[in-house]
Image (tube, rainbow, N blue to C red; front, side, top):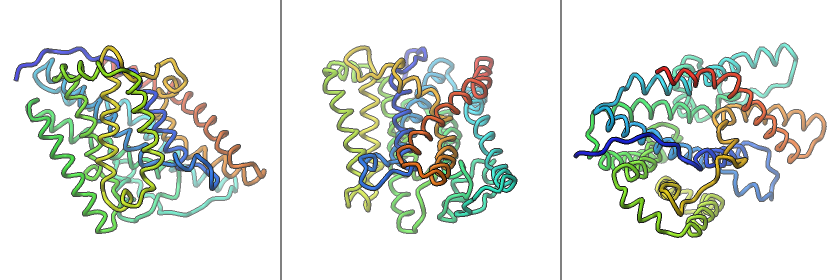
Length: 356
């Protein structure tokens, strides 16, 4: 198959979607009062799955362009750029988690020992998710309970990069179908065995669903043009439907017990991404909006938020603060720390990506 070379572009709306996905995770971990409308958006797993779909789109898009422009994928360059984005803050948070018990003991602060003692070798090698799966528990120190998704992301980068290196571009659709099938079957098996679906095999379908719009965007321009003919009002209406699905579907009985969520949300998120692509009539949230601006800090927000929630939860209990005060304070402090993290720490490593 002969395809034209392409120039990598920036995708609007993605930063906003990342932040909205983060909010689902944040609300899941926040002390939301019973009966609050926020309970309908306490969907951390859905938020993480959207992260995976977005990642599947972007990584597949990047790898396709690399192969188009260079006839091969420079894996060394690809992995270096991923390392510069993920590793610095990840290991900074791991060091913080390691030091936390000593800090708590030094200041004689109350500490909940609920959960398993971390195996630091597994943590530093991005295998924390398998520790969680084997114990059926979370680590007893933040932010380790949320880094399972980063482990899955790392495994995806390695597997997807190597597969894309060896297969031809025309076989990408076959790869997508195989990955969706593997994930669906794996989730059924894990459900029968009582194992949590926290590894790459059970989640690779989300990345595959993200790869669908990436493939269409590069190779099937006529489909993107047809989608651009749909009035934008219907695309915004679809976004509203996705929000309703997030709020309502996970509580439906059949949805809980049948491993169908990965298919439904995979399709919903994949189509939503398609509606953001093209030159006109697209679903768009401006990068200059508050969601777009905050979306730049999503990685830091995700890793830092559990620490802030624990901190303000203890402050709230000591000073008898309302749950909403705790939630808002924790969110604002998380944003503040993530902002500092990005500009003072992460950005220094991101600058190095230009020389890779």
